[in-house]
Length: 200
Image (cartoon, rainbow, N blue to C red; front, side, top):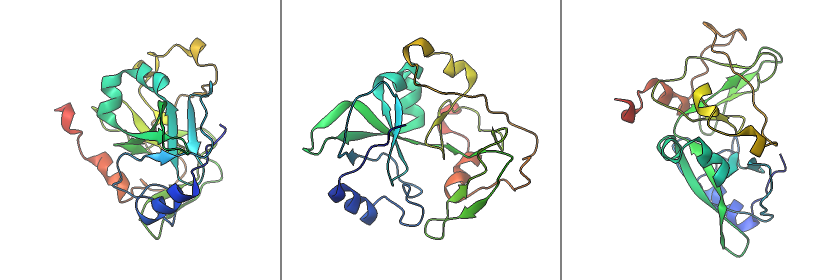
């Protein structure tokens, strides 16, 4: 990744509104996030982040390759602007309506953000996995690593030959967490226990 920078005025507004000052990510309950970038650019890297904000930025053509209907159902999409407040229509931000913690088995640690109550997990290496089982009826999840988690059949929709900058790995769902930690459910993550309304 080659992270983007948000303009100072936009960052100051974010700290007053949607950005948690404890963990520097969007507060739990925040949906779509619009950003004004200091260094916007369209590159072959389809997925990127905004420095210091925990906001993923993605090429719209890449994201919609998974199916625009699924994208709009499972993700909140925000707009991206250049310093002159002109919208960059090739890029969008995204926030998952459901968020998964990608975990690992080495150098395990976690904490609860004192400001917003979100679980912060850094057990991210050594046999990565998700736990507990993701809810049914959802096809696209945001991870705390600013990436996307999806079932294999959805991943197969993209042509990797067109996206050579994409890295991916298969995540297991073990019967119990091998890192020895509990479910790591935070205020925000409790939504994972609620059936997705459109899956009925």
